[in-house]
Image (cartoon, rainbow, N blue to C red):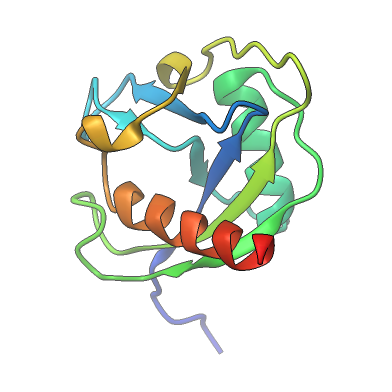
Length: 140
């Protein structure tokens, strides 16, 4: 039996540092070229979503990340103008003194204190809001 045609699988990662900032990239390619976005990308064949998340963060920011916590799954058909994608989003903390270096398809990678002051690509504002709710729930 042939596999059905399905949405593309992606990952996104919310990474906080010790100062409460979030790591964002500036997209180097369309769609949303030049806009801030979470590090992430497509899951490769024979790769888990966790491994894909760590790989994409390493490729786009140069950082090695550890433990991942699931934020949620984002599957709105119009979330990516290139076609239907489903993203598994994770939350993690950056290693101490982490200095990002943009790579792969990221034009820049930087720590941002107030991400709400910037327009974000895709549905990444929603993912960041959900990550903050999750982190707030854990702090109680």
